[in-house]
Structures are given as structure tokens and as C-alpha cells.
Length: 181
Image (cartoon, rainbow, N blue to C red; front, side, top):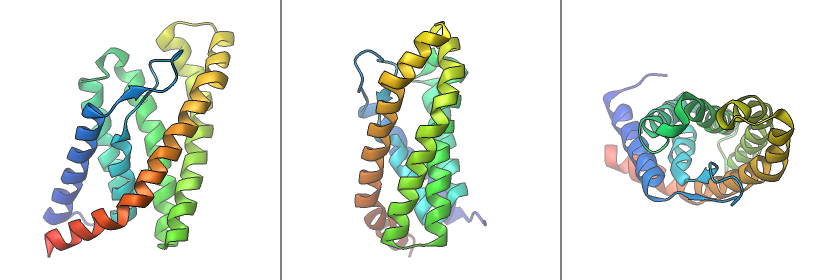
């Protein structure tokens, strides 16, 4: 994919929007696992993936994750950044690939559904490996956290992000296209 100056500026706008959402709209969803915070900063990455392709969505994801790792999630170190990139990146990649092959409303829904499933499934083994390191917990306790907190959190997160993306991507796309005209 060719990254023109115009495309880079539009991806920077989406990255900035993701950062603003990440900084100002964040809250824990599962009281027993306060480290699992919802923030809608992933929505602009999904929009970028639909508008400009999966590689653009991954680029926006990387920008958001790097800034998040250096600021609001500095306490979770590289583990939090890696987990966030794996989670969001898997959803952005799958949703973008499916939508590229079928750029319709149905394709967007299917992409978001398959991306959500990919993220939810991928995060089970990654949480099993990294949560025990981050929280210094035995594997049995981590299994319990995955079942009672991680999976429900990821279902919630993907459902909300998918809904917001479906509601916003066409309008954001129109704004960005007209802005560059």
C-alpha cells in the first residue's frame, strides 16, 4: 500500500482521535480485575482498517499502543503494550481483511464478528502466559481470572467497539474523504 502525505495525515488524525478517546474515556469493567480497563481508543484503528486496509489499521493500533505504554499504562510495562497490540491488532487485522474482500455492510459485520472471535480466543493463551508474570499469580488463579474476567471483558470490549465502529465508520470515512478533496 502506498502511503501518500494525505493518507499519513488522515491516519495521524485517526491515531490522535484514538489517543484522545483512550485518555479521557477509560474505566474498569470487571471489579475483581481492575487492570482490565475499557477504552474506545481501538475504534479509530478499526475505522482505519476499513477505510485504508489492515496495514493502516495496524499502524494506528501501534501508535496508540506505544503512547499508551509510555503514559497511562506505564505500570504494566511491555506486557501491557504487547497484550494490547495482540488484542487490538488481531481484531483490526481480521476485520480489515474480511472487509477488504467484501466491502459491504454485511462484510463489515462479518469482519467485526470474526475479528472479535479471533481476539477473544487469542487472548486466552496470551493471558495464561503473561498474566501470571504481570500479577505474579499461580497458573490455577490465572485460569480462574481468564474464565471470570478476561473472557467476559473481551466479549464486552469487542461488542462495544464493533457497535461503535459500525455506527461511525461510514460517516468518518465521508468526512476524511471530503476533507482531502
